[in-house]
Length: 209
Image: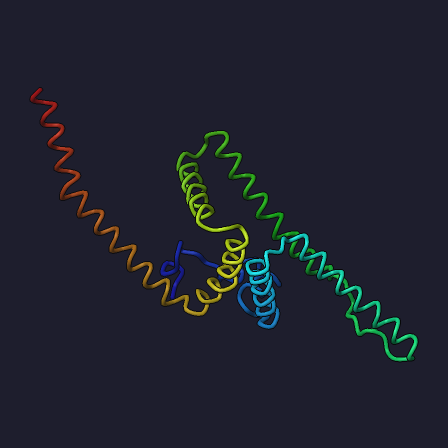
């Protein structure tokens, strides 16, 4: 399928559009164990918050307290009984992952600031209307659910929709473009059949008056 048969006539693949690094690998399930782990952990956190009534601060504090107590007692008993210490991995964020995350966040924040500046200075009315519509939609969704459920649902969509799209990209692009072309034809027919007639009728009325 050529670039003109792709959505937005794009030349690059989805992996490259998402940055082409570890973040893109995570979103597109190139690192399945990590992606599944994130989904399961966030699902567990969501269930705990929804069912137990915990707040974020109290849950984190209790989990950390339990963790350090277990590790401390394990290390002390291992020292007394001449047993091996707890097998902790090296708790260190790699420089490569940190740089990729920094670049990804910096690019998105700069794009957001550029869009905000254009809207604030009134440079793009269409963009203003789009952003206003999105914010209004978010406001409606926010009124229907709580922040935690919205955050988990958003994460679930981010980690599933791009991967499904990449897998069935040709079929999805084909059907969306077909639907778009049919809508364009429908728009032309409506414009020729009704809008033009109404416009001509208004002009005739103005001439007669």
